[in-house]
Amino acid sequence: MSPPTQQRLQRNRGVSQWALAWRRLKTNKVAIVGLGMVGMFVVMAAFDRLVALYPPQCLVGLSPSCPSPAFASNAPPSAAHPFGTDLTGYDVYSEIVYGTRAAFVVGLGASGLTMLIAISIGLVAGYFGGWIDNVLMRLTEVFLVIPFFLILLVFLQVTIKLAPTATGGIWLVVFIIGAFSWPGAARIIRAEVLRVREFEFIAASRQIGASWFRILLRHLFPNVLHIVIVLATLQIANSILTEAAVSFLGFGAPNSNTWGQQMYTSAGFIEQAWWGTLFPAIFVTLMVMGFNLLGNGLRDALDPRLRE
Amino acid sequence: MLDQLWHLTLPATVYTFALLAPIVLLVRSSMLEVLRQDYILAARASGLGERTVIYKHGLRNALIPIVTYVGLYFGGLLAGAPVTETVFNWPGVGRQFVTSTTQLDFPVIQAVVVIITLMTLVANLVTDVTYAYIDPRIRLE
Image (cartoon, rainbow over all chains, first blue to last red; front, side, top):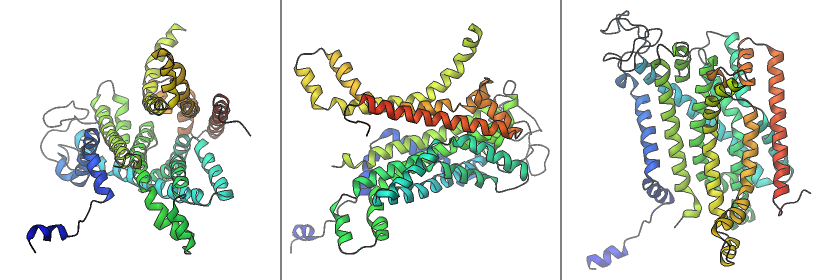
């Protein structure tokens, strides 16, 4: 056969839904900026020893592993310390870089836990309906009404008093943020499940005898995945912000070094040494903004109503 | 009194900006939905001024879902903003809660949590009732 006919006979692979969504996302300039910001923070977290100027928690000038300049507490921004030093003498810029990992741990951990609970409850409540739906929605409302920020403060304070030298404190923060943020997401997922379960392929699956578990996992879940992705991204931003707020008030997890805690230690000197509080705050803002922009862009890119 | 107002401007402005953005986005998307409806076209066709069409027919109908969200936000507002109050040293319930949590003053902690939960519940209830009242398509069963 001639080459053109041969080419036409080759199977056309087609484009997947994800490729289409990625194409739509790329045209959204704001979302790409958000993606870029998130990417920058990922690089900061992964290569923190390379990006930072000094080793972690190093008393510059005093400790032998810390190079050159003289020890300076609360020193203003200069050539040796681009963001100045804080009360203890640590370089603010390096401390910020080392705190990026903690921020990601909190964001991803809390968001993952929230989505796990929200997906389970949303899928079950939406698919079964009836009294199961009723009970789960009342439970959701109970969690929605409790002011979880205040509960978080109390839990952390009790933990700090009970075990001041504990090391895993940050996981408690992750757990509590995750355990209280699921109601909003669960309601949205349930609404989407109510829409998807009317499709004929669900009825067909039921007809040929698929178990409810199989229908939930293999048929319903992939169809609510687009909403789950958007909610997870926005929840990461929310969790980081909540953790920063809690640490800033002084209730941070005992032995972790997060941006909120850096703001807390420098907050008393905000008049003389504004750089200790300002720069961690700027980085928190940038990270949360990056995830928010990305989440909004993903929502526009994955919305089924905009499909061509 | 005037002194209190003067000290109130900065915290109030900061807190307002935080809540402003989601509401603006909501109003925008709600208005976009409503302005696509047929009755807007009918109102324009019957010769009403543009301002009447947008405000009286468009905005009024768009406000219905917004009222629900604003009601929930208002419940959250009453929960106090511990962070804002601590930063601006404003003597409010939020700052009081932070101080008493630091000292593990349990009666105060319990009282504040109960009160704030009650206020949020009442705000939810009022929102639901208002929603049923202003939307003629829904009637309380």
